[in-house]
Image (cartoon, rainbow, N blue to C red; front, side):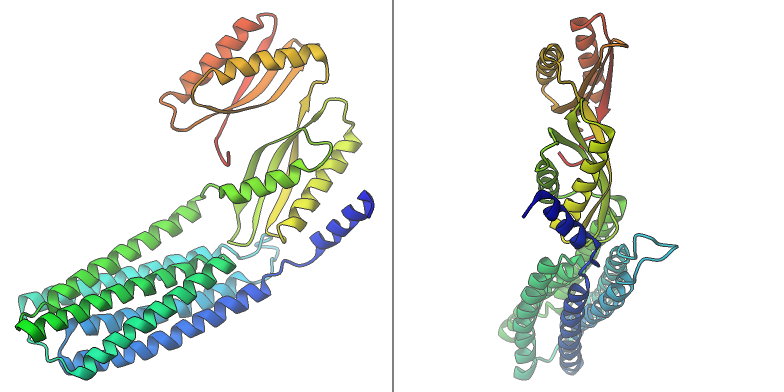
Length: 389
């Protein structure tokens, strides 16, 4: 197939709708399974908790019910996030999934706090539990069910890139551990007559609160804007670098509009003899190829150009400046080098790690050293941010 046919095929793929329907169906199916399982577990544990006068089992039932509510919210959020883009929200509603995860974390946090209050009341005014074989069997069965459910939901969540499912799966596995602690309290009471019910309830509450806070922080971090994963950044850069006109790929910036859509820009280095028409074609090729090869999950809205001088004299200057920059410990990258002979202007970009004790000081030192090396030129260096590198 010719290069033109390749580009036409990629363009047709890019024009196709984003395949989110199957992902949405998978999330909904998995959430429905979670709802059914948690409602059944909550019902059985609530009955057993009331009959046996066990605060730990009752709180376990409440936790299952909150998990079921979380699954309901996940379904609603997924449906809303799947709405088509419109004039008001041209990039779609994908970020609703982040808000859904936030609501779920708040529900978990509320359940943990109310459970803690109940546990403290039981510690202050204790009541003797009355365990039966049936009660212990129900709790044990709940442990097995939670482990199976948690592993399944977590696996599906990772496969379809759904943070809410991954969190629900992890929560289910944590619940299984807490249910085991409830069984332990029951064994201790039956063997030695020591009631640890309220204390186990307090421990369960603490774990629930901890899980809610962790989920809330993770969601807030996503809304604030997290660094793109190294795997995705490397994939996009490698796709861009495949173009025969690209000499280097830098400054990849991607903004998230939901788990399945990122929009941003990238800078590429091209020879200074490249024409405007060639740059236009290059930009279109890059955008279409990235869109097609990431299944529509990454949209390159703009392609910036760094002009690389083809003169041999400038190549030696570039190498000299590169050595100056590389001598500094916290420099992560040097790029965008260009010399304007007519204006005696020397330009380049440098990325200094955020961990550097004095980023600004190190940057200014690099500029001074470049000015000393080339006194006849005005040095214009840009301190770039470490976004994906």
